[in-house]
Length: 155
Length: 415
Image 1 (spheres, rainbow over the protein chains, first blue to last red):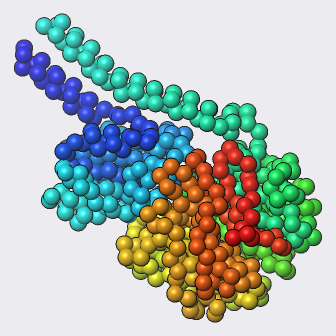
Image 2: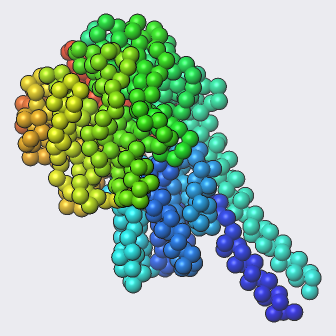
Image 3: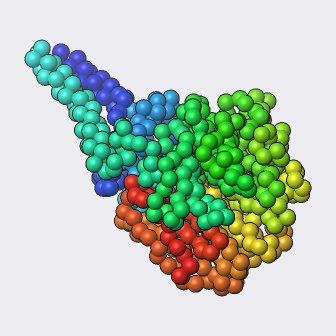
């Protein structure tokens, strides 16, 4: 009986991890919250937008990567606005990313948010930050290539 | 045992719900903040320049300021006779509503011609992702009425025909250029690789009644940066855009027309070698002075060469001055504009100090050889458009659209 209960709990946890996550609104201070969520953990922070063709290449690649390596810590942030929420959710689902930690820029403060994350990021997309467990990060503009990912994972 | 199971179930129901509740709370907060934020978010807000998206502005020969802007699926045009202190009632260009791209890199354009002619172009947003049509309309009675808009791209398949640029010469020839993905579509069907879009154009030599068959300037342009166009002193247009050179090197290119209807040889403008498979959303600018020099400004973000640049060419793009780097790279210096008036060259751009966006300008009084220090013109804590530069017969102004604020001109002559 106890074993069956344990199995049920484990299944439920598994189900929770795979369940669709809400897309949260990124405000000033949310970035610090994301860092805290990944305390002493390596993770990938990926920015994208609905009007960026190469971003779709990136999202497709990440969706596949996550299928192969479900434990990969990934945060995706859309630089669109909460007004585009429905379309953002549709795209994330399309790329099998609807269960990851997802955010969208709050309205009208894109520049403030970018500056908080990286003053040298000019909004070009896709833009990714590869964090190691000590939270040293490497910024990558453009679609992430397998070499950069391998180097990061080898750390 | 069943009690334990029930507890476990309750726990997971609660756990699952908290995420949704949190999201709902956030959405509510967002909605609340937005309504307080500005009158522009009201459902019944009337079309106004204050609440418009990404306006374009230009002076006519009599010093009247004309503005074209998008609001609620219409392009509107209005004017000011007192340098932006008050504006006329807006006139809708398209009477049938359609979705319109209205953002920093892709905004409605307006050009004033002779004999009361006003030309307007924009990109219609279509349902499919990244798709659009290039639209054109004009008024022959000084902006009182506009003719029904026409689609300029003769390839009508729903794909990307976007980022229109427009210029009109003294003869009244209308040039429209844009980024077009018809060749990408074709390549995809044939299973071939194709990077980016292509630069296409059409010409109207009958005052806007009809446009020529579309022609291609070149394949492999960058996909999402604004295209700019200016008329040279020989009345032929010059187009500048971000291009893809070789393996994803996104530098700038220029083309001057050889004659009334034919684009010439493409020249490379910048050698910053920004190699990136990404969308910079950051296009160049051009201004042609009376003596025939082309003044260019652009942004690049290559690891070794980055920031804002200015360069001049006196031989129609065959050779360029050593690019001048300007603006503070660590303060997000972005979206440069250039305007020449005789030997006076003006640059305007935007920076960000962590809290406020700042409009900067600097000027050269010797055709771009030496420059003043940068001056702060205005600041805003809220969202803002790219700054623009315009000139009437006497003065040069910067206009900077800040949502919910008056559309104000900033005279630059005193600097």
